[in-house]
Image 1 (cartoon, protein in one colour):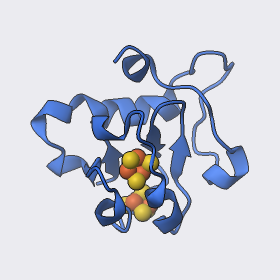
Image 2: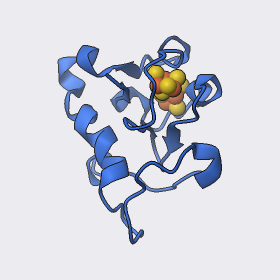
Image 3: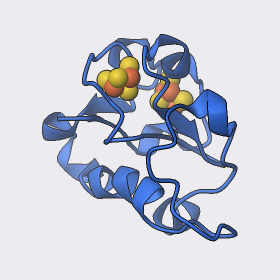
Length: 109
Ligand code: F3S
Ligand code: F3S
């Protein structure tokens, strides 16, 4: 059950979560960060450090943010604007650096 970053992260991007993640699976978009559901080991270390409480386990995401569960996944499985292939599971955000784009759902918010 991976963890998910929801709407409160948008335009805040505090990034304390990135420092806590032992497997480096939190990737930076343009206005928000995204947890890779294939790489997250569900340790939960990121959840309490977010100052705007944007992070929760997928089965505990507040109903108003339910669409962010699938949207976090889409960030890695679909081709993002300006790219020619899905990100997939690149093995850590330190290898990729900031991705710099968001999913269409986040861009439109
Ligand atoms: Fe966003 Fe909170 Fe991390 S604002 S970058 S989810 S610490
Ligand atoms: Fe990392 Fe949070 Fe998952 S710290 S391993 S993204 S639960």
